Image 1: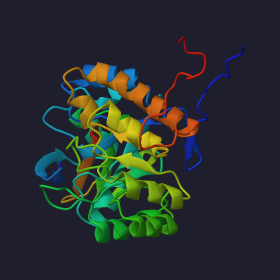
Image 2: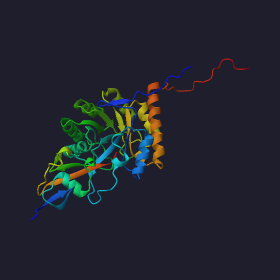
Image 3: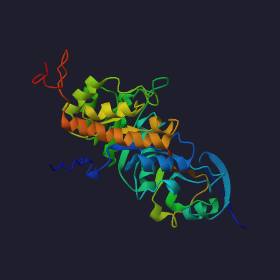
Length: 70
Length: 263
């Protein structure tokens, strides 16, 4: 049986099939890794570790990018 | 007679050299095409950007980076919307991971309608960011005591407001800004308040190293044309500063000789 886990993404609760890495999550969401940055439980996830960083049930992630600003 | 080539020497912040003394914001434009065209017309090499959550329901939406190439322009991520040192540090750590550089713009604002720089919170955030390895260009009050303290903490540029953000009221306190320039050992930029080209000229004439402009360009009727006007204004103001203005005098002094008049 496939396990699922719940992640809080930018404040919203979402369900995913386990196991999932940061790289897998971004691909699932349709985001290009070079255009975003990811924080997991208030800790930066270095881009170089996306493929080896497995996410755990209940993890809270912030996924951000650059927008226009002054 | 040879006319000397009057090329401005440019300016340097945190070891990075820029030919253009105009730094532009990327907010408030109609769309990304207009953003890109205005930045191109401005001649700026450094642009401010904000850090925000990705809209997960529309991941394929166009992004600023698709229009304003981070390899061509130095992105200066800001802390707009952050009210505490903790939020500022979190935001800029994310920006550093997204962009891979340490040069950032710190701004911690008080409440509307002034959005005046909150200096106690700015000191706290600047200290935390510098400790974390950031090179901090700091938005601040036109307060020479606060500016000196920020410089001594290790901020790489001091950026007092000319007038409230987005007000377009021009440089309201040029005398104090001039005194801040005299005491500054790091670059000093006017950030916020410029409304039109003449305001940018004044900022540069009094000796600012550069000017940061967003609303005055983005909210002009023709942003691309105003961007070009600002480019010329910054260059004109810098040249006038280097040239040194004539003394003011009370009363007239004829420009044509009084000798040899016909009688």
